[in-house]
Length: 551
Image (cartoon, rainbow, N blue to C red; front, side, top):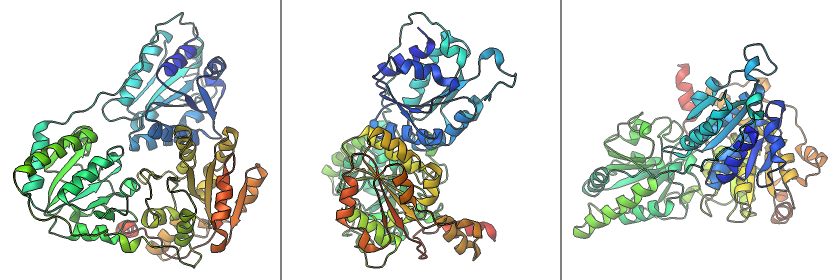
């Protein structure tokens, strides 16, 4: 058995069903062996970077290890951004890259580059295997590291000759599984006592609450504490819940800022947020000022990173919430807790309004959502339109947004749509992207067509880099001419690829009939929204933060 086959047998036994990437000479041994393994389906992308975003989304929504493969040299470096993206989202992705034969290393071989050190800052583990007898043990080790503790990406470089090496009939080790991180009971008890004794409080929820939303909502209802979400966590808390106070941070809501500025909330419970720049409205000191702080997370490095945390609770968030709820109920059953909680009745109500008649980004997106099924998942790219999605679009169903505001990689939403659809085929998926992002990774719509994936790609085409344009206008009172570009008919591009498409040029064009027709296509479809909106996007204090460095 070739070593490459042994690797694939291990992955098959570990539940892997798709391998994302691009074939090339330095990884062709893997692709050749795939001919004999129909259980593993290769998803051949048009660019390795897009393949990495597909794999990340597949890991996120498939609930297991995802695999992405690229050739030595440029193929590997094209994967680095996706690895960083997966690292920020704590997603277990195995990045396999080729490498030149061991005996040609250092001889300027074709596409030679030592990539293991390059991957080290953006993965949990990165190694090159130079002896075939160590390959399976390194693979099992990398898998274990990827899913343990704080999940994240790993990388293994496999030289061409190692892939082809005969390893006999090796014992294929069992796949790795994650062991729960159980929080210390003492920390949970201290947190519960503080929450009850310290009076009114509020909750800030990050993306780490995914999979534990019901417990979080139950806890908030028990205490009657308002819930704020970070931009990254949009889609986890229903916006019609009476305790929902909106989004705090980038493109957030005034209602959430009012909660933060209200000194009567004397405790802040932080659940699953690393309290980064976009989540804290540019590290707003008022978030924790005058408050007792409790933070639930499975990543010990997030505690006291920027804000002083009084009670860190280290453990899986689901277990921490379960234990915290039990402790609160036990304590509350013996005595009435603190002061009366929130009197808020849907604090963000005034900011979630219906679409108006003016043809602008906000109204176009709201009209689009009105035409789509409630359970649609939106994979949202990076750009001006993203702030409108965060600020204005509704949350009609659980887990309905995928927005990586943290790392902010343009084009990531396009690959994410494909990975999401493969992981959950029955869920409607709509990618909202812009012309700038589309010109980076838009050819993956052809990948979706080749796979027969019914995804609606919505391209907000304003013939410029919209967020850059508005940001520079506000910060410097001028913009460089290069931010704009000659208008391109993206619908015609889709038609050339045999993909159903429609070009919207006004509010009347965004109708249920047109959208339903596109959604019923047997493969991908494209809606191009041609619109140059000169309204200032709801970016919050992002521009103020950047402007502070020019003073």
